[in-house]
Image (tube, rainbow, N blue to C red; front, top):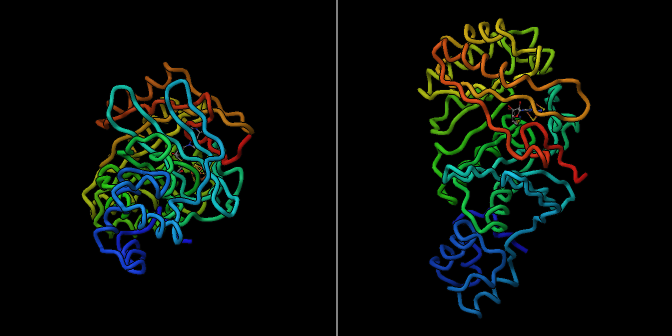
Length: 339
Ligand code: SAH
Ligand code: SF4
């Protein structure tokens, strides 16, 4: 059986060729899958009943199951999806009342090897990479379930996208071509895998690179993120500058704010100094509680003070709205488990 979700137009044409149907049928099927997000072949109503029956003998729409679906009081939806091998990942749909955007937060791996101290995903260790089809299936599942069209995709779910870069790049190409989501509406977030940042710098992409920096200096960063021992902030600084030089694009710096650890006035000043020659916006992420660590979220006052100091250094700073925390769907709370 062929799984239609995840196939390119060319691959769908191979199926219609085998069934001795025209290429136009392939285009129709492609639109039903990516733009109209049907759940079954029977819903492809501009195909004849006879042709649909033939297609059903060789193909199905999807082989991914929704295991759990939760809705937050703020409208955020979290899905636990199961792939045929039994592995599960989470995918989140964020809607903002005041904006037309529908943003899907997708996972790129089952588990994650980077194991940052503040993150629920890292606690599971690395299990496996997702194929590009499994990545885009997350967005298709959301579209099929809600009947809505996703407008933005962020690779900020489970996993380190740059440790699965080939599949992530192929998924981005398909988001662009098959889903018609503009490259500017795609964001890849990384914990700072330098060789792959350099590789991205060579590709002429319109997408946004987000770097999870989270600390103003080496000592604090290595407490939070083991990866600092392998790819440290000095080398990262060079990689970021190189990225901006090569692409001309502005980077997003993600900075997790943890009470008394990296939210002080000195930290803000040190961070401003580190970023002073990097073309970037800063996105502050107040820590979301996860089990098994003692970190705390700073007070709103501390968050605003930190923001003010960074803004004073000339950066555009936003504070990330906490979405879906009541269903553990906020940043860092995705563990990929049903309980
Ligand atoms: N692996 C990638 C992308 C997934 S994580 C990365 O680390 O960048 C998406 C964002 O959520 C990252 O910036 C991550 O550091 C942040 N995050 C992880 N745990 C968090 C927590 N408990 N509270 C708030 N943000 C968290
Ligand atoms: Fe992996 Fe990102 Fe979580 Fe770190 S924050 S463990 S890199 S998913």
